Picture 1: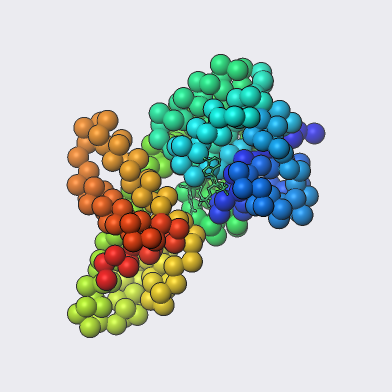
Picture 2: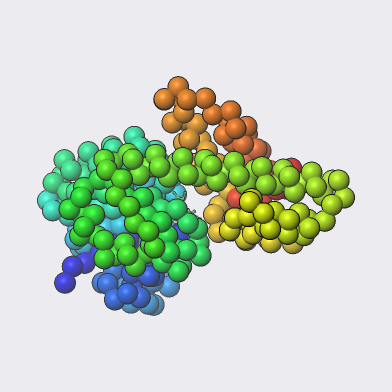
Length: 286
Ligand SMILES: NC(=O)c1ccc[n+]([C@@H]2O[C@H](COP(=O)([O-])OP(=O)(O)OC[C@H]3O[C@@H](n4cnc5c(N)ncnc54)[C@H](OP(=O)(O)O)[C@@H]3O)[C@@H](O)[C@H]2O)c1
């Protein structure tokens, strides 16, 4: 029976690994902070000593890590993915990173005879728990086909977007739009409040017309009562805006909205809201 690894058990990775275990796959997990492996172990997962140990034990290893620095540390650092990689093994990275990081990881994996797929995901904590993510895969087609039964336990829509880099860039574009939408939404709510309008009325009116969307509905309900329980950490939204601005720099594409929104998210991090949900950006507008 094929063996599967999972590296990175944060908000998203823990839910995704749980879905694989609950689907009956034999999964070996690892997380930098070992305490986060306990729940998965209780559910039946094995626990590896290091990324190298997990990769050495498994046919396909999945990863869901914070950012490019984390993805690089786990791939290239001590006892890393590379140290356990041998010919024929697969590595599928769900982390949101820049295309350059993804291509460097791919080059290193393939130099060891392994195969690589980038697969950033759209959708947050609840879709991760429900197995209804949108998976933006790109890279080795045979590994995609091999991993597809697992991916189908994690997502409701799974795409193969071509060469490595296309998934990363797609994810960055989608999240840049999302960050801009959230900032415009919060700015409007803050203005409405200052103008002595009822937030509940603004939300109701938005939801009745062409601006209705699940994000405004879900996050608006939290903002209305000051609940910023973390589904998507604000620090990761700012990281994605940073990656979008870097992509715009590389392509000489002006991004005036994203640049302004990035400053607001940086301000929110400075105020100490980085680990709260990204909807906590509302607090810098009030
Ligand atoms: N949350 C969402 O709604 C959402 C949605 C779509 C995509 N994403 C993307 O998915 C990725 C994970 O998001 P998340 O919300 O699950 O984040 P998270 O809860 O902050 O988890 C981050 C994970 O990365 C690990 N990590 C961080 N730095 C590391 C390092 N230097 N070495 C090894 N491991 C390291 C953390 O380990 P520790 O436990 O030891 O800190 C943890 O397992 C990010 O790229 C994010 O942008 C998130």
